[in-house]
Structures are given as structure tokens and as C-alpha cells.
Length: 202
Ligand SMILES: [Zn+2]
Image (cartoon, rainbow, N blue to C red; front, top):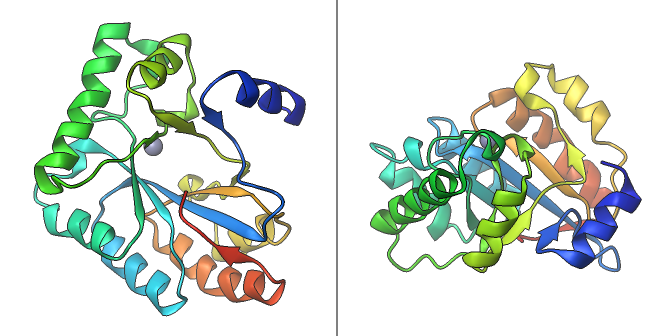
């Protein structure tokens, strides 16, 4: 989606593609967890003093409740990424609502105090139904302005090269299950800090 299109959409609907470009902050976002590699990711973020945002997949919470709790207790922000990871474009509105509500219920089963207002559609597939859901549940849809493309099994260097050139307010999409992502961030976070960037959760 081009910049004009996304800025027009953002003024009309509860959709966010970027953070505030007037601040020096970058927003790291991690989709599809909790995963077996999340604890390592949390250690790495803590070592670098970085707060991030995790878009949680409801079906992955069972047997990983302690990992979800660890994300929350570390001070990261948690958002809803659906229960099943079905594209919003393939579901009826009532099925979509059920899928998103089921994820929220599953997160609250573990974290009763969780009261997030952010969500992200699986695959970034926006639809009229997804926007309707966000309005109905008073959620802000968080998309991204930079994609690490880490789901295509790239090398650390490929991720590093793709993300050297970032700008204030960029929301960057990662997935928390890939070690290659963490290895790239070990290099990128100090590089970004050296450029004067800070980090914040959404
Ligand atoms: Zn996803």
C-alpha cells in the first residue's frame, strides 16, 4: 500500500501504519507467538533495554501460558492477532468476530488484567469486516511500515540489510519464532541506537 493511501486510511479509520514521526522512536512488533523461542527473544530485548509489542495468536497459548505471562510481566504490550490465524477476507463477519473474541478470551484466561486496545489482522489482510470488528470492539488496528520478511527464511544479513534504513516512527514487523530474527536484532538494535533511535511499545 502506498504512503498516500495509508495516510488517507489512517485519518478515516482506526488504522495505524506508523508511529509519531516527530519522535525518535521505532516500534518493534512480533507476531504469531507465544513460541518456544519467545523466552530467548525476551532475554535479548531485556539485555538491550527495548520494549516491544507482541501480537498474540490465541491457538498458541495452550501449554505456553507461562511464556505469555513472561511477555506481559516484562512490560511489553500485547495485542490480539486472532485465535486461528485465518485471513479476515475468508471469514464471515460473525466468524471473524468469534475468532478475534476467542483470542481475547484466551489471553484473559492467562492475564485477567490484560486490557489491550490493539489488534493486527493475520497476514495484514484488512477487510471491511475487520475494520467493522475494530470499531465494534473499540480496537486500534496496527499495521506496519517496515517488514523484516523473516517468515521467508532469510539470512541474518538479509534482514539486517533490509532494515538498516529506518525512519522515526517506523513500525517494524517481525515474527517471534525465528532465531534468525533475534540474531539480526542483536546487530540492528545497537546500530539503530547509534543513529539516535529509541524504542517504545505501541
Ligand atoms: Zn501472523
